Image (cartoon, rainbow, N blue to C red):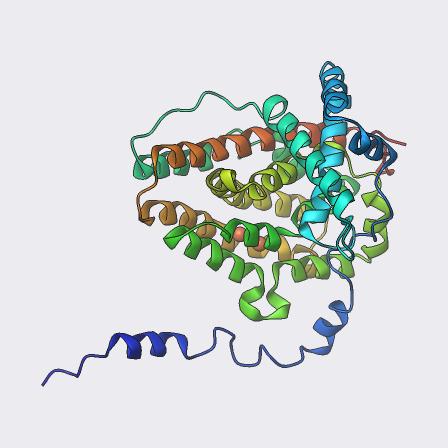
Length: 380
Ligand SMILES: [Fe+2]
Ligand SMILES: [Fe+2]
Protein backbone atom coordinates (compact mmCIF):
# COMPACT_ATOMS: atom_id res chain seq x y z
CA UNK A 1 0.00 0.00 0.00
CA UNK A 2 1.53 3.33 -0.97
CA UNK A 3 1.70 6.13 1.61
CA UNK A 4 -0.96 8.81 1.14
CA UNK A 5 0.51 11.69 -0.82
CA UNK A 6 0.71 15.05 0.89
CA UNK A 7 -1.25 18.00 -0.37
CA UNK A 8 0.65 21.05 -1.57
CA UNK A 9 -0.31 22.82 1.64
CA UNK A 10 0.94 19.98 3.81
CA UNK A 11 4.29 19.91 2.00
CA UNK A 12 4.68 23.67 2.28
CA UNK A 13 3.84 23.66 5.99
CA UNK A 14 6.15 20.71 6.71
CA UNK A 15 9.07 22.58 5.19
CA UNK A 16 8.28 26.02 6.65
CA UNK A 17 6.82 25.31 10.07
CA UNK A 18 10.13 24.59 11.83
CA UNK A 19 12.18 27.70 12.51
CA UNK A 20 15.33 28.34 10.48
CA UNK A 21 16.86 29.45 13.76
CA UNK A 22 18.51 26.51 15.45
CA UNK A 23 17.61 25.68 19.04
CA UNK A 24 19.07 28.25 21.40
CA UNK A 25 19.53 31.00 18.83
CA UNK A 26 16.85 33.17 20.39
CA UNK A 27 18.31 33.03 23.88
CA UNK A 28 20.78 35.50 25.33
CA UNK A 29 24.26 34.60 24.06
CA UNK A 30 27.11 33.41 26.24
CA UNK A 31 28.85 36.15 28.26
CA UNK A 32 31.87 36.43 25.97
CA UNK A 33 29.69 36.86 22.90
CA UNK A 34 27.37 39.30 24.66
CA UNK A 35 30.34 41.40 25.74
CA UNK A 36 31.59 41.76 22.17
CA UNK A 37 28.09 42.69 21.01
CA UNK A 38 28.13 45.68 23.37
CA UNK A 39 30.39 47.31 20.78
CA UNK A 40 28.93 49.35 17.93
CA UNK A 41 29.40 47.65 14.55
CA UNK A 42 30.83 48.52 12.10
CA UNK A 43 33.63 50.19 14.07
CA UNK A 44 33.15 53.60 12.47
CA UNK A 45 33.02 57.05 14.08
CA UNK A 46 29.85 59.14 14.14
CA UNK A 47 29.30 61.38 11.14
CA UNK A 48 30.59 64.84 11.89
CA UNK A 49 30.13 66.62 8.61
CA UNK A 50 31.45 66.07 5.12
CA UNK A 51 35.01 66.73 4.14
CA UNK A 52 35.36 70.40 3.03
CA UNK A 53 36.28 69.38 -0.52
CA UNK A 54 33.11 67.31 -0.79
CA UNK A 55 30.98 70.13 0.65
CA UNK A 56 32.28 72.43 -2.08
CA UNK A 57 31.62 69.81 -4.75
CA UNK A 58 28.09 69.17 -3.52
CA UNK A 59 27.18 72.84 -3.64
CA UNK A 60 28.65 73.37 -7.12
CA UNK A 61 26.51 73.34 -10.27
CA UNK A 62 26.49 70.24 -12.47
CA UNK A 63 28.68 72.09 -15.00
CA UNK A 64 31.18 73.10 -12.34
CA UNK A 65 31.29 69.54 -11.03
CA UNK A 66 31.97 68.19 -14.50
CA UNK A 67 34.67 70.77 -15.15
CA UNK A 68 36.41 69.94 -11.87
CA UNK A 69 36.39 66.21 -12.58
CA UNK A 70 37.66 66.79 -16.12
CA UNK A 71 40.58 68.82 -14.72
CA UNK A 72 41.48 66.07 -12.26
CA UNK A 73 41.56 63.32 -14.89
CA UNK A 74 45.08 64.24 -16.00
CA UNK A 75 46.46 63.32 -12.59
CA UNK A 76 45.53 59.73 -11.72
CA UNK A 77 46.51 60.08 -8.08
CA UNK A 78 44.43 63.23 -7.43
CA UNK A 79 41.56 61.97 -9.54
CA UNK A 80 41.51 58.60 -7.79
CA UNK A 81 41.73 60.16 -4.36
CA UNK A 82 38.89 62.57 -5.11
CA UNK A 83 36.53 60.02 -6.63
CA UNK A 84 37.17 57.16 -4.21
CA UNK A 85 37.35 59.02 -0.92
CA UNK A 86 34.19 60.95 -1.67
CA UNK A 87 32.32 57.95 -3.01
CA UNK A 88 33.12 56.13 0.23
CA UNK A 89 31.72 59.08 2.23
CA UNK A 90 28.61 59.04 0.06
CA UNK A 91 28.09 55.27 0.37
CA UNK A 92 28.34 55.44 4.16
CA UNK A 93 24.93 57.10 3.98
CA UNK A 94 23.48 54.28 1.85
CA UNK A 95 24.68 51.59 4.26
CA UNK A 96 22.89 53.41 7.07
CA UNK A 97 25.39 53.37 9.95
CA UNK A 98 26.46 56.19 12.22
CA UNK A 99 29.24 57.35 9.86
CA UNK A 100 26.60 58.05 7.20
CA UNK A 101 25.36 61.62 6.73
CA UNK A 102 21.60 61.29 7.15
CA UNK A 103 21.20 58.03 8.97
CA UNK A 104 19.70 59.47 12.17
CA UNK A 105 17.70 62.34 10.75
CA UNK A 106 16.31 63.29 7.38
CA UNK A 107 17.15 66.43 5.43
CA UNK A 108 15.36 66.47 2.10
CA UNK A 109 17.36 69.24 0.43
CA UNK A 110 20.74 67.93 1.58
CA UNK A 111 19.83 64.38 0.60
CA UNK A 112 18.88 65.56 -2.88
CA UNK A 113 22.33 67.12 -3.22
CA UNK A 114 23.91 63.92 -1.91
CA UNK A 115 21.96 61.83 -4.39
CA UNK A 116 23.07 64.06 -7.28
CA UNK A 117 26.67 63.85 -6.09
CA UNK A 118 26.45 60.07 -5.96
CA UNK A 119 25.25 59.92 -9.55
CA UNK A 120 27.93 62.35 -10.73
CA UNK A 121 30.76 60.46 -9.03
CA UNK A 122 29.47 57.11 -10.25
CA UNK A 123 29.40 58.43 -13.81
CA UNK A 124 33.06 59.33 -13.32
CA UNK A 125 33.76 55.90 -11.86
CA UNK A 126 32.20 54.04 -14.76
CA UNK A 127 33.43 56.28 -17.58
CA UNK A 128 36.96 56.99 -16.41
CA UNK A 129 37.93 54.58 -13.70
CA UNK A 130 36.64 51.13 -14.48
CA UNK A 131 37.70 50.30 -17.97
CA UNK A 132 37.74 46.53 -18.36
CA UNK A 133 39.25 44.38 -21.12
CA UNK A 134 37.24 43.47 -24.22
CA UNK A 135 34.63 40.92 -23.20
CA UNK A 136 33.62 37.81 -25.11
CA UNK A 137 29.95 37.35 -26.00
CA UNK A 138 27.93 34.31 -25.02
CA UNK A 139 24.87 32.67 -26.49
CA UNK A 140 23.23 32.09 -23.10
CA UNK A 141 23.65 31.98 -19.34
CA UNK A 142 25.02 28.41 -19.45
CA UNK A 143 28.00 29.38 -21.60
CA UNK A 144 28.45 32.52 -19.49
CA UNK A 145 28.43 30.50 -16.24
CA UNK A 146 31.12 28.14 -17.60
CA UNK A 147 33.16 31.15 -18.65
CA UNK A 148 32.73 32.81 -15.23
CA UNK A 149 34.02 29.66 -13.52
CA UNK A 150 37.19 30.05 -15.61
CA UNK A 151 37.44 33.81 -15.03
CA UNK A 152 36.93 33.29 -11.31
CA UNK A 153 39.85 30.86 -11.15
CA UNK A 154 42.27 32.59 -13.52
CA UNK A 155 41.72 36.37 -13.50
CA UNK A 156 44.78 38.46 -12.67
CA UNK A 157 43.48 39.23 -9.17
CA UNK A 158 43.58 35.56 -8.13
CA UNK A 159 47.32 35.00 -8.22
CA UNK A 160 48.29 38.64 -7.72
CA UNK A 161 51.86 39.09 -6.38
CA UNK A 162 50.49 40.95 -3.33
CA UNK A 163 49.47 37.63 -1.83
CA UNK A 164 52.80 35.87 -2.46
CA UNK A 165 54.41 38.90 -0.81
CA UNK A 166 52.17 38.57 2.23
CA UNK A 167 52.97 34.85 2.40
CA UNK A 168 56.73 35.05 1.91
CA UNK A 169 58.07 38.48 2.79
CA UNK A 170 55.77 40.84 4.66
CA UNK A 171 56.83 41.74 8.18
CA UNK A 172 54.51 41.34 11.14
CA UNK A 173 53.76 45.08 11.00
CA UNK A 174 52.90 44.91 7.31
CA UNK A 175 50.63 41.93 7.89
CA UNK A 176 48.92 43.68 10.78
CA UNK A 177 48.34 46.74 8.61
CA UNK A 178 46.93 44.52 5.88
CA UNK A 179 44.55 42.93 8.40
CA UNK A 180 43.23 46.40 9.27
CA UNK A 181 42.58 47.05 5.57
CA UNK A 182 40.89 43.67 5.21
CA UNK A 183 38.70 44.36 8.20
CA UNK A 184 37.56 47.70 6.78
CA UNK A 185 36.92 46.06 3.41
CA UNK A 186 34.81 43.31 4.97
CA UNK A 187 33.04 45.05 7.84
CA UNK A 188 29.67 45.37 6.06
CA UNK A 189 29.79 42.41 3.68
CA UNK A 190 26.49 41.12 5.05
CA UNK A 191 24.81 44.37 3.97
CA UNK A 192 26.42 44.16 0.56
CA UNK A 193 24.95 40.69 0.14
CA UNK A 194 21.60 41.93 1.45
CA UNK A 195 21.58 44.63 -1.24
CA UNK A 196 22.41 41.98 -3.84
CA UNK A 197 19.29 40.02 -2.91
CA UNK A 198 16.98 42.93 -3.79
CA UNK A 199 15.64 42.67 -7.32
CA UNK A 200 16.95 39.20 -8.08
CA UNK A 201 14.48 36.41 -8.62
CA UNK A 202 14.28 32.64 -8.49
CA UNK A 203 17.47 30.67 -8.00
CA UNK A 204 19.75 33.71 -8.16
CA UNK A 205 17.77 35.17 -5.26
CA UNK A 206 17.91 31.85 -3.40
CA UNK A 207 21.71 31.57 -3.59
CA UNK A 208 22.20 35.24 -2.67
CA UNK A 209 19.82 34.85 0.28
CA UNK A 210 21.57 31.64 1.39
CA UNK A 211 24.85 33.53 1.27
CA UNK A 212 23.32 36.29 3.42
CA UNK A 213 22.03 33.70 5.89
CA UNK A 214 25.59 32.36 6.20
CA UNK A 215 26.91 35.92 6.69
CA UNK A 216 24.58 36.39 9.66
CA UNK A 217 25.65 33.11 11.21
CA UNK A 218 22.44 31.28 10.23
CA UNK A 219 20.96 33.14 13.18
CA UNK A 220 23.74 32.51 15.69
CA UNK A 221 25.40 35.71 16.89
CA UNK A 222 28.76 34.01 17.39
CA UNK A 223 28.79 32.89 13.77
CA UNK A 224 28.08 36.23 12.14
CA UNK A 225 31.09 36.62 9.88
CA UNK A 226 31.51 40.12 11.29
CA UNK A 227 31.65 38.57 14.77
CA UNK A 228 34.86 36.83 13.70
CA UNK A 229 36.21 40.30 12.88
CA UNK A 230 35.17 41.47 16.37
CA UNK A 231 37.16 38.56 17.79
CA UNK A 232 40.19 39.61 15.74
CA UNK A 233 39.97 43.15 17.12
CA UNK A 234 39.45 41.93 20.66
CA UNK A 235 42.36 39.48 20.51
CA UNK A 236 44.74 42.11 19.17
CA UNK A 237 43.42 44.91 21.38
CA UNK A 238 42.81 46.58 18.05
CA UNK A 239 39.60 48.57 18.50
CA UNK A 240 41.14 51.97 19.24
CA UNK A 241 43.95 51.40 16.77
CA UNK A 242 41.41 50.76 14.02
CA UNK A 243 39.48 53.96 14.79
CA UNK A 244 42.79 55.80 14.61
CA UNK A 245 43.98 54.06 11.45
CA UNK A 246 40.72 54.70 9.60
CA UNK A 247 41.70 58.36 9.24
CA UNK A 248 44.64 57.37 7.08
CA UNK A 249 43.08 54.42 5.28
CA UNK A 250 44.26 55.05 1.72
CA UNK A 251 41.89 55.91 -1.12
CA UNK A 252 43.04 53.00 -3.31
CA UNK A 253 41.94 50.50 -0.68
CA UNK A 254 38.35 51.47 -1.47
CA UNK A 255 38.22 50.50 -5.18
CA UNK A 256 36.52 47.14 -4.86
CA UNK A 257 34.08 48.28 -2.16
CA UNK A 258 33.14 51.39 -4.14
CA UNK A 259 32.73 49.42 -7.35
CA UNK A 260 30.51 46.93 -5.57
CA UNK A 261 28.39 49.65 -3.92
CA UNK A 262 28.04 51.47 -7.24
CA UNK A 263 26.63 48.29 -8.82
CA UNK A 264 24.49 47.33 -5.84
CA UNK A 265 22.75 50.69 -5.43
CA UNK A 266 21.73 51.20 -9.07
CA UNK A 267 18.93 48.78 -9.97
CA UNK A 268 19.89 48.50 -13.64
CA UNK A 269 23.31 47.18 -12.62
CA UNK A 270 22.06 44.33 -10.43
CA UNK A 271 23.23 41.59 -12.83
CA UNK A 272 26.66 43.23 -12.93
CA UNK A 273 26.69 43.14 -9.13
CA UNK A 274 25.99 39.40 -9.30
CA UNK A 275 28.97 38.77 -11.63
CA UNK A 276 31.13 41.08 -9.53
CA UNK A 277 30.28 39.22 -6.34
CA UNK A 278 31.02 35.86 -7.94
CA UNK A 279 34.59 37.00 -8.65
CA UNK A 280 34.98 38.48 -5.15
CA UNK A 281 33.89 35.21 -3.53
CA UNK A 282 36.12 33.11 -5.78
CA UNK A 283 39.44 34.67 -4.92
CA UNK A 284 38.91 34.57 -1.18
CA UNK A 285 40.28 31.04 -0.79
CA UNK A 286 43.60 31.53 -2.63
CA UNK A 287 44.10 34.93 -1.00
CA UNK A 288 43.28 33.83 2.53
CA UNK A 289 45.47 30.71 2.31
CA UNK A 290 48.41 33.00 1.53
CA UNK A 291 47.48 35.42 4.30
CA UNK A 292 47.28 32.56 6.81
CA UNK A 293 50.67 31.21 5.68
CA UNK A 294 52.09 34.71 6.18
CA UNK A 295 50.57 34.94 9.66
CA UNK A 296 52.08 31.55 10.53
CA UNK A 297 55.48 32.65 9.23
CA UNK A 298 55.55 35.70 11.53
CA UNK A 299 54.20 33.74 14.50
CA UNK A 300 50.57 34.94 14.58
CA UNK A 301 49.01 31.63 15.53
CA UNK A 302 46.12 32.77 17.73
CA UNK A 303 42.92 31.22 16.40
CA UNK A 304 40.98 34.32 17.54
CA UNK A 305 42.95 36.38 15.01
CA UNK A 306 42.82 33.71 12.31
CA UNK A 307 39.20 32.53 12.54
CA UNK A 308 37.85 35.00 9.96
CA UNK A 309 40.36 33.72 7.43
CA UNK A 310 40.33 29.99 8.29
CA UNK A 311 36.52 29.90 8.16
CA UNK A 312 36.31 31.69 4.81
CA UNK A 313 38.86 29.38 3.21
CA UNK A 314 36.31 26.61 3.74
CA UNK A 315 33.10 28.55 3.13
CA UNK A 316 33.71 30.75 0.12
CA UNK A 317 34.52 28.11 -2.52
CA UNK A 318 30.98 26.81 -1.88
CA UNK A 319 29.57 30.34 -2.14
CA UNK A 320 31.16 30.88 -5.54
CA UNK A 321 29.96 27.49 -6.82
CA UNK A 322 26.45 28.31 -5.64
CA UNK A 323 26.55 31.65 -7.45
CA UNK A 324 27.56 30.06 -10.73
CA UNK A 325 25.01 27.23 -10.36
CA UNK A 326 22.35 29.78 -9.44
CA UNK A 327 23.07 31.46 -12.76
CA UNK A 328 22.68 28.15 -14.64
CA UNK A 329 19.41 27.30 -12.92
CA UNK A 330 17.85 30.75 -13.22
CA UNK A 331 14.42 30.86 -14.91
CA UNK A 332 13.10 32.61 -16.84
CA UNK A 333 16.26 32.42 -18.93
CA UNK A 334 18.33 35.58 -18.77
CA UNK A 335 18.15 37.97 -21.71
CA UNK A 336 21.22 38.67 -23.82
CA UNK A 337 21.61 41.97 -22.02
CA UNK A 338 21.46 40.32 -18.60
CA UNK A 339 24.04 37.70 -19.61
CA UNK A 340 26.32 40.48 -20.89
CA UNK A 341 25.85 42.38 -17.63
CA UNK A 342 26.81 39.42 -15.44
CA UNK A 343 30.00 38.91 -17.48
CA UNK A 344 30.73 42.64 -17.46
CA UNK A 345 30.37 42.75 -13.67
CA UNK A 346 32.90 39.93 -13.33
CA UNK A 347 35.35 41.83 -15.53
CA UNK A 348 34.83 45.04 -13.55
CA UNK A 349 35.58 43.15 -10.34
CA UNK A 350 38.71 41.63 -11.77
CA UNK A 351 40.00 44.99 -13.06
CA UNK A 352 39.20 46.81 -9.79
CA UNK A 353 40.83 44.06 -7.75
CA UNK A 354 44.02 44.02 -9.78
CA UNK A 355 44.35 47.78 -9.50
CA UNK A 356 43.68 47.76 -5.76
CA UNK A 357 46.16 44.93 -5.15
CA UNK A 358 48.85 46.72 -7.21
CA UNK A 359 48.48 49.81 -5.03
CA UNK A 360 48.29 47.80 -1.83
CA UNK A 361 51.54 45.99 -2.60
CA UNK A 362 53.34 49.30 -3.21
CA UNK A 363 51.76 50.75 -0.06
CA UNK A 364 52.84 47.87 2.17
CA UNK A 365 56.35 47.85 0.73
CA UNK A 366 56.63 51.59 1.40
CA UNK A 367 55.77 51.18 5.08
CA UNK A 368 58.41 52.74 7.20
CA UNK A 369 58.92 50.21 9.95
CA UNK A 370 55.15 49.91 10.32
CA UNK A 371 54.65 53.61 11.13
CA UNK A 372 51.20 54.99 10.35
CA UNK A 373 50.72 56.69 7.03
CA UNK A 374 49.08 59.98 6.29
CA UNK A 375 45.80 60.50 4.42
CA UNK A 376 47.52 60.16 1.08
CA UNK A 377 48.80 56.70 1.90
CA UNK A 378 52.42 57.73 2.32
CA UNK A 379 54.60 57.13 5.35
CA UNK A 380 54.12 60.01 7.76
FE1 LIG B 1 31.72 36.02 4.82
FE1 LIG C 1 31.15 34.23 1.29
